[in-house]
Image (cartoon, rainbow, N blue to C red; front, side):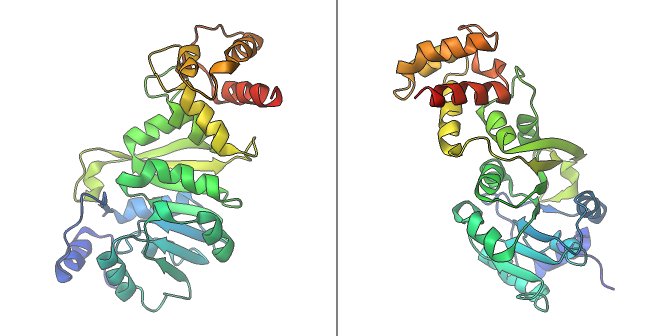
Length: 285
């Protein structure tokens, strides 16, 4: 049995053989710690019923560990050079237990991919550049994808799990927690990656929630408007937004109902508070 792709020496040999320089612009950092990759797959309880989505598969460091456990792995890789190497390394699995999609994940329709491949889990070491928007996109567009197990940079993990009122609590925190319940499982040192990034990572779990509103995009637009001027009061931010400035009195009275006063700032409200405000505002239409 040759070494795992994720062993430092094998990753280095593959990159050398194909003359690959990893790209900063794509945020390519390969996990070269096989024990951590095994821990990720174990933590995700990946089993033969699972059809797994993996974004940023690279040369297959994680795919190789997922494959024996899962029923199928649907891999997304934007870099054509890496996708070609991946195809060579996994040629006997392509089109049977692996589907490879060589596209930009941020432009894909995950609703269609989920339907076609019956995906139920999202397990990935996400490229740094796209991690934040991609998490929202995948949870927003899919219906039956229940769980995500993701390695992301620590600052995004901290934003997702920030407590109300904390300095990194933002509209992103509200939106991600509207879509799913997140928890940080363990830290992953920057030394576990090649090339070594400037930041540490974290492995997180997300459990999808049933969306409260039919139109999630409209709710997100409201949340963004509330956070538009971070240091200002919520009402002052909404006053500058054409969509909501004529609803200020109504929002102030809704705030009163949850014992919040009109001087409150956006970061002092919970996800539930935002749901309450938006619901009250929409039903009043």
